[in-house]
Structures are given as structure tokens and as C-alpha cells.
Image (cartoon, rainbow, N blue to C red; front, top):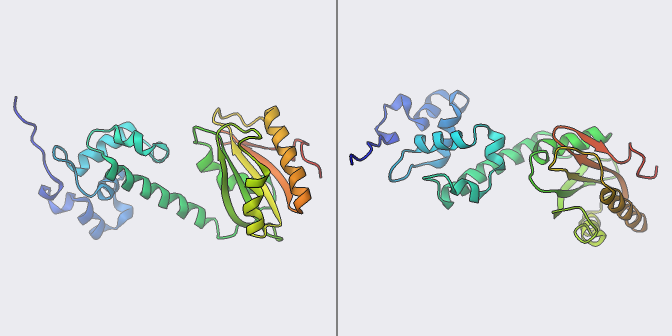
Length: 232
């Protein structure tokens, strides 16, 4: 059987090599496959970096799909091993942190939509429930966003001790609770309501106000405060 002829990136004309194109034209001029090829750096024994980039885009046609893929998922693609998967995940994480930083180091939370907007693009695509807390200062500006648990929302996973430990350490004046529904429907369950009320009571004892609990769906959200499940 005739072996497939592999054209390496370095064998291409300079005008077609991703790194050379970036140097000459700037990163904004590059197609997504070129950017991925640069991140991958080199191909495999059988394929060029551009071929691997094409293979990635065939499996994950959008950046959101690629960012949601795990290291294990990426390693299922021929030519992508743990090292290349790690490079891709690192690039996605840098993009996520840049997006968060572009919102301002300490964005102000004036209402539920501000809190939802801060986490929507990341949390709407998660395939499991992630519970997070937004730590706020006295001016209702975000000090930090912290993960509390991953999994179903119940009292065994979301314990007041774990949630408020970081709040106390960072001297938070108030918090907003956030979690996602992978189904895409943000309507609260009885567990959501029960856990929220429990955490509100714990916050009162510590002098840390729970301002709201935002549930993220697929590009939509609900506020438990607006629904009347939190005391004013």
C-alpha cells in the first residue's frame, strides 16, 4: 500500500505558513486553522500541524465547542496527545481569563443581569452543575468569583462552611450565589430553593448578606430574589 504523502508546514511557501503569515499580516488576518496550527506548534509523524487543526475543526467547528472539550476528549482525535491537548486547553483558559478581565477588574453588580452577564458565556455550556459565589465589597463590586462545588445542588455539596470560608478571608460584605442548569432551563427546583434559604440564614449569622441566587440556563437566567424566594 502506498504511504500517504505528508506535506509539512515548513515545506509550504512562506506566504502559506501560519507563523510567517502572523509576522507579516498580524494575528487578526489569520484563519482559525492557522491560529490552531501555531498553538499546536508541530504536527505528528503522519500529519502536519495544519492537518491536525483541520481535524480539530471537523470535530469542534466552533470555539465554544473546542473550549468545552476536555483533555480526554481532545486526546481522542488522531494526532492529538496529552501535550497538544494541554496546549489547547491552556490557550482556551487564557482566552477565558482575558474575557473576564475585559469586563473590568472589579465590575459593579447593580442587579441580576449584571451578575448573569459576568458568568453566562462560560457557565451556559457546562455539562454539569457548577455552584459558584461572587464575592462583593461594600460598593457591590466583585472582589472575586470562587468555585464552591461541582455536581447536583444539595446540602452535602454546598455547605455553608465551605462557601463562607473564602468570604470571611476576603472580607466580603455580600455575596451572590450562581449555579447553572445543564438542561438549559433555569427554573429553580425545590432543592435550589431549600439550599438558598439555608445559605441565606447562615449568611445572616455571619453578617454577610446573600443578595441573590442566579440560575444560569442556555442564554437565559432567573433570579431567585426577583421570584420572591429571598427576603428583602
